[in-house]
Image (cartoon, rainbow, N blue to C red):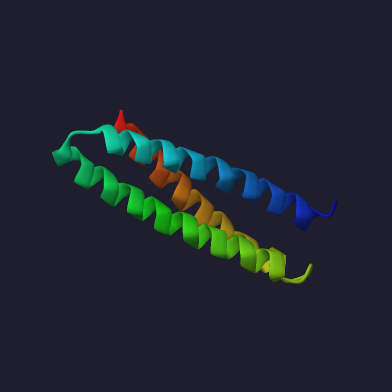
Amino acid sequence: MSEKEAYQKKLQAQLDEWNSEIDKLRAKADQAEADAQLEYYQQIETLREKQQESSRKLEELKAASDDAWQDMKAGIDSAWDSLGRSLESAKSRFK
């Protein structure tokens, strides 16, 4: 397995885990009181947008040549960090 393939698998696994976490937050939001639901749904929408952006970046990485993917790595890592921080922030608010 190449370094690029290993990196892709790592990113995909993290994205899948985060998607599951967002689904759990959505279930909590569905059970929240009406006034809290709006805030929760807004946070979930923001998370979904970041998740979709990260997914697009992963697809770009998959399409990149073996030489070009290294140049994309910094941008992808930044998107992943942003999504991870946002998810942790949202999870702390949902407790």
